[in-house]
Amino acid sequence: MSPATAPTPTTFIFHGGGPCFFMDWDPIDAWDELRAALEGVIPALPTPPRAIAVITAHWETPEVAITAQTSPDLVYDYGGFPPHTYQLTYPAPGSPALAERIGGLLGVAGIAHRYETQRGWDHGVFVPLKVMRPEADIPVVALSVLRSFDPAAHLEIGRALAPLRDEGVLIVGSGASFHNFAHFGSPLAKVFDDWLNDVMVLPDAERRAALTGWAQAPAARIAHGREEHLIPLMVAAGAASDVPARTFYRGRVLDTEMTCWLFD
Image 1 (cartoon, rainbow, N blue to C red):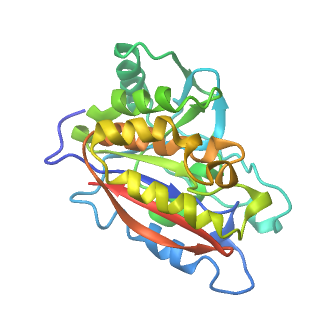
Image 2: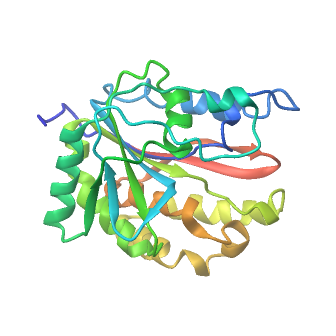
Image 3: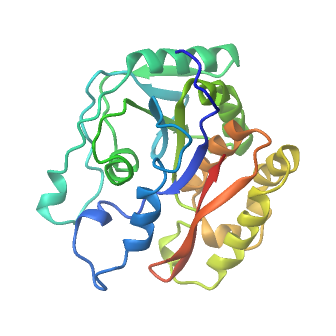
């Protein structure tokens, strides 16, 4: 891929709950602020991305898996929602060429990976992208998280993918800064969120060290009993190198503190 005029930012987003943006809620505006924040991501970039690579919390594999289809199907990996949410569409093209480029970068870094030609895009991919880019006109490739949840390994994945920023690819970590159904609404959500916000603006080496040891942070295991939704942040931060994070959304969703960041 040819170089872009300026490095494309990386981002970590809260992708919401299931198909939350496309159904009725009580209160009716429960997801409006997050929706507006996600809608603003791509218009705020220096130039529109040529492609989007999404690391999704909802796909766990032993090695990095990369979607390599031209037209991936959607995986409606949620349950108990209204019938129309199982008919949502997101007809963006896939990009086998970008998948191969990603695999090449991971290979150079010695990171095990494979190409996926059967599994489609889960709701950690198509639901936020349907908000962020409803035109569905930008090629998309999805990546899994490692089943090990090793934070250092995911920071290295991000570092390996960093050259994509110079090629106009928007790297999106799709998860949640808080994800523990047993503790939604806990005041301790803000304790961990405050820690994350402090860490996100540290220099690269300090940030990497803090994220590697995230489980020792205040209220860490209250925020993430199982860390699959936090791990995509490691990839986004790893690809950002020494760029400090900029908070583009911080608010309360379902009475729980949540944050999204952009690494310019």
